Image (cartoon, rainbow over all chains, first blue to last red; front, top):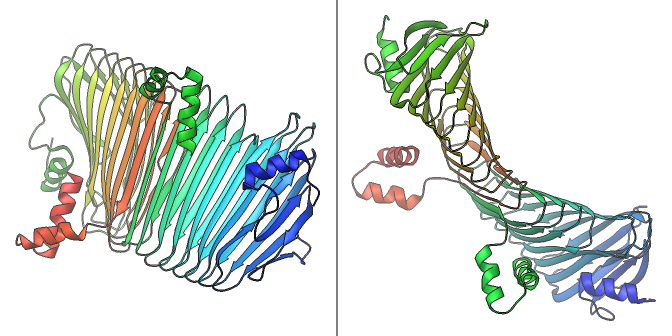
Length: 308
Length: 308
């Protein structure tokens, strides 16, 4: 595993990785494998069906283990479509950290499309974190289109946290989660766009089993002339509870659309959504300025807190 | 004006009319005009451009006056498309009561499509009420597709209250309101569907002027196997405030979708929406039952309060 300064910076940004990860990992760099380690309970293997990507198999009862699968692109002109499939046994409690960093210093677009599918066994708990980050001073676009599909069996839960920190010119996120009996999905989305970036997030949580619970918390900041569109959808097909909450801060000449949908197909479904779009409250800025912060520092402080 | 028992019942249901209305009115019955009265300030004239419908012209400064324009259909097999245009001057304060009642005892559908357009002058206040009701024991459908378009000039307001009481087999409501500087639109929608009825409500409030305010309060009850879809959209193009609130009670095997959109095109736009779908709370029913109501009475009492 040869690491440059660029690699190190990207890996730290997207996966909080400093040095070699603990536990199972797979590092994908510029379409190749730059390091892989399985453990007794977590087996990572390359796809054998001709597709790009990996299979991750986690044994029944695996608890307290981590799995890191960062992707970095350090060259312009790379286009890739990657399939990562997670087969998680029963009664597990695992922490999966994905993420993608693109460093583009060239004139051509670099693009990563990742399709992650999770089959989560009965009573297993998964924490899944995905950070996206772009940098580099090239004119080529940094593009990421992540697709996440999750099937939760009885009593299984996923806590999914996605963060698009900065530097992604165009993203289209698609997330679909199917919750079985007593399963729970909690999705936290944090997104910031600046310049003339565009971001779209489509999400559907289907509460299929009795006792299923879904919660979406989406927070976004749009600066410059960037554009954001959100379509979170919560479908209740059983005795379930779903809650969607979207809050956005709009700045400069940005554009934000928030179009959540709640769909009840069962009398026993209880669904709620809330959304708000507005600028930073003037009194919050003023308060921080009276504490000695400059207007810019006050703004940054508020945004940091909002996206934390 | 010849009134049958059916006419009287429909007119009372949809326009609270008992006997001849006070002030200006136009009663449309089975595609014909069944009575019309203008006043000094409110002129009602039939369309002369070949279309069905009327023009209502209200003079500047008209205050405290009412205008009733109910439509009743008492025969099966009637299909009509009617245009009613309201030209409301400046500094008015008027109360407009529309509404449509269909009594269908036959095998063929009866259908009323009404397109109402309001041009509301500066600093005028309009209260607009629209009630829809169907009855009759025929197998023919009772169908209503109302379309309402409102242009509010500076400082103008509209308070729009729509009620679909019962008996409408299929409805597609379309409402579009454009708010100028300091204009305000408050839309209250009440809708109940039962049996295998379908209802769709599309609404768009465009807050174009600084100081514009929009508020949508939508409450619905879906019983039986009925289906409801709501698309309220609030667009902020200026320093404005918009709030969308949708609450639905789902019963039996009904289906409800609530898909509000908030769209911010200005940093100074402040937009909020909230929505909830659920069944009647068990503790509310229980409380009323302990007060001596039967389960059915308790349910009816709660629904009445919810849709009041």
